[in-house]
Length: 108
Image 1 (cartoon, rainbow, N blue to C red):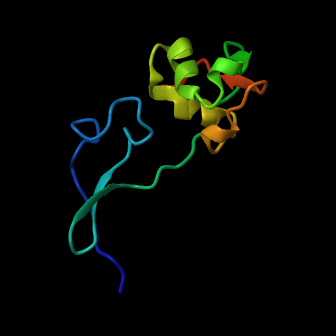
Image 2: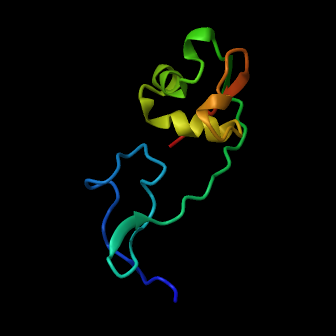
């Protein structure tokens, strides 16, 4: 038997996630008979290449720390996952010293 799914009118930014979260634009759903709250599935977005994009080589102090690069580049740690996504990285373990990365000009 399939689990019951109901879409709510809840806004993810009101008490669930911050504006920089990948789930900020998701729907919040009740799932199953116990009405567990969860988010709809996140779908990866593509970041078009722009002449305003920046490129960098990950230095030793930033290895495995896309949050630090996000803070330095965008003024917030919240876009670390967008940096990974724009560079086709699936895990912070791929964020290694010496790797060339693209820092998209627009991440919002």
